Every structure is written in structure tokens, then in C-alpha cells.
Amino acid sequence: MTKRVVLAYSGGLDTSVAVRWMREQWGVEVVACAVDVGQLRPGEDAEIAARARAAGAVEVEVIDAREQFARDFIVPALAANALYEGRYPLVSALSRPVIVEHLVASARRHRADAVAHGCTGKGNDQVRFEVSSRILAPDLEVLAPVRVWGLTRADCVALAGKWDIPIEATVEKLYSIDENMWGRAIECGVLENPWAAPPEEPFTLTRTPADAPREPRELVVGFEAGVPVALDGEATDLVRLIGAVGDAVGAYGWGRIDMVENRRVGIKSREVYECPASLALITAHQDLEGITLERDVAREKQRVEIRVAELIYDGLWHAPLMRALDAFVRETQRDVTGEVRLRLEPGRCFPVGRRAPRGLYDHDLATYGADDAFRHEDSEGFVRLWGLSAQTWSRRQGPGARR
Image: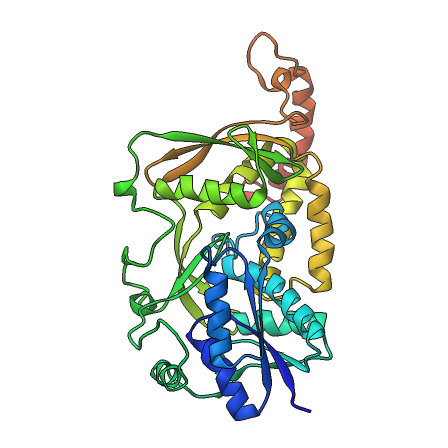
């Protein structure tokens, strides 16, 4: 019986050529599985399905996973304020585990022997696809045609033409772009020179600040237990809320990231991202936690957030440590309910107000006015004991004691 493979299909050049190439070179039947996490335009699902069939796929599935992506992946990452190396909100990395979940489910439906992806041998995504696949379905083989076929971009364009695959691609492609509702990742071209400034050409989610509105604007983001649920006082679903925040913030020219990051395979890579929605929501969420999390919980959570971001980046979303840390993060979110006011100015987005019904800010303790309820007389003994160890060291072993 012919082996059947389910391919994570993007609809682009590499995965389209991979459909036919695997059929020709490996003699397998290919099922194309495209998962929409916010990257598809209206009506593009039919276009992608037609392209996959033209490439030779025996079956095609286009799955709308936007709500699941937002609910089950973006929400936990936002709760953890997940930023890889303190800057990158894990746009691509966060989408891979949900894609793999559907890839494996499709393999079960179609009784496939293997799953496949279109990643190269030097990127992070091969790790994310393969590790998640082996955790969720250790019995399935994982294939990586792009890693072994030795084809250049020109070769792929030529094969697409030879096989009548309708691809809008040329040899002179300038950038590699990956997009979903959490943001946009841009690579290649002039960006491979870390000294070169990013041109305006590849940006679509953010304006240059010079073209932003001159009049400032404020957004009020409402949270319930760490989940964004309202914008400017109006309840809305998460997918719409993310889109609306991204549109508003991007219009003010804020949300771009230009960084050299450390890839999982051991190389440094210059990456440019557009993340107006994700960065704005993380900014608001962090600010709300400032008024709702107890001090020691907040400090410990900051350490956990670093590790959560690393696990997501490294393709370990479905690993046991991620489950354990997610349980801690979810516990911290019980009272992260309230509103944050974000002010938008050209090239800027920052909090200017926050309120929470169960917040830990006590005006009577914080004020220096007539309502001050703080017991100032308690501080003398506290300060003396707090510094006692350092004072003892100074007296016995410090610079003055050595004279």
C-alpha cells in the first residue's frame, strides 16, 4: 500500500513544490493540511485548496483555528508576558504547536503513516514541528523534504512552472514572511546585514511614526482573570479585540522590533517583527499585574516568564515542564481583573492609568496626605533590623574594620 503523508501546507512555493516532489521522489500520497491562525485573507482558503490540488495532493484540508489559537495559545502566552530574550512575543513559535495539533489529527483521520513540514535545516521551525509531532504522536514518522532535496529557490520556481503549480513567486523574492494574528516575522534580503536599517517596504501592520496621526489617542483594555475581554468598555471576542488593538496601535507607528536573536540551532539571526497588538496587550497586562499581584508572587513570576518564553521558542509547548509552569501562571491570574488605559502617540504606546476591583493598591497606606494610615513609628525598628546584618559586617569585616 502507498504510504500516506500529511503535509503542513502554507500554500507558498516550498510546500507546494514539496507536495509534488514527495509524490515523485518518494512515491507517497500527500494530504495537504493548511491551518489558518490569522494569516489568510478572506476567500484565500479556496485559493490555497486549489493550489494544493494542482500540486498533486490527494486530499486538502483548510482548518480555521483562529479562535483556538487565541484561546488556547495566545491567552497562556499573554498571561506569562512571554517575550523571548525580553523582546520577541513569539509570533511564529506560538503558532506551531496548534498547527501540529491539527496536523496530527489530520493524520489520524486520513490514516497516514507520517507527517511532513516545509522547514529548512537551519531554522527554529523544524524543531517546533518535529518535537511537537513526536510528543503528540510518537508513532508517526516526521519527514522534512526541504531539508534533503537540495533545491534552490530558482529550482523550485522552475519546478512549479514545469508542474503547472499556480504560484505567485519569483527567483528575486526579497523577504521571507510569516504572519498570524499575533504579529508578523520578516527575514532575508537586506535584513541579513545586521548593520542595514530595515526598509519600509516589508511593513504592513505598522506605519512609520512620521505618518502617524498627530492627535494622541487612548485605548482602554479590560481584562478578566488575565484575559482581554473588552476594548473601550465594549465586550468583544478575543480575535476581534486583537485585530482592533493591532489596527489602532499600528496606525501610530509602534510595535516594530529589530533584533539579533539566538536560534535554537546555535546561530545568531537578525530578525525584524511587527507586533503592535501583542506588544500593546503584553504592556497592558504587565501594568495590570503591577496593581494586582502580591510582591513575592510577582517577583517569582518574572523568573517563570523567562523560562516559559524559552520553552515556547524551543518547541516545547507540549512538554511536561510547560504544563507545570502554565499551572503556576494560571494560578497567578485569578485576580488580574480590571482596566488599563494605553496612550498612543506617534511611535509610542504606554500605560497612563489602571484600576482593579481587587487590586492591592491601598490609597490610605500610599498617600502622604491627611488620610495617611501608615504607622510611621513601626519603621524605625524595621529599618534597624533590616540593615543589621550589613551593619554587623561593616563593623567587623568592612573597610573601616581593616585599618
